Image (cartoon, rainbow, N blue to C red; front, top):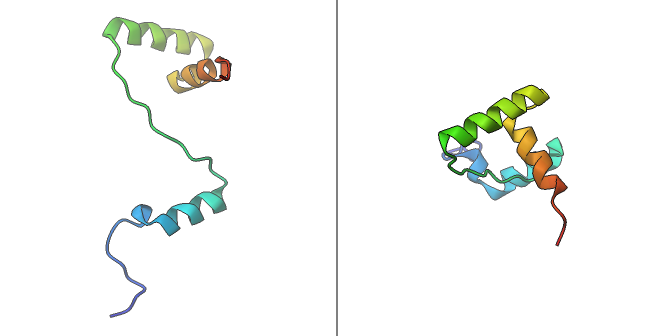
Length: 69
């Protein structure tokens, strides 16, 4: 059987990950999930919309403003 075909997820292979990120110039990222009360989520969503930003942009900007320790 040919070695060109390989079962499994290409993203699960370590060599595929490093080649893709190297070629694309993508910074390694981590997903962050957490729960918010509905009222807080609404407040965040409204704030982001009024600023013309996404929730991700608002939270990223906030985290970037934190002091380095």
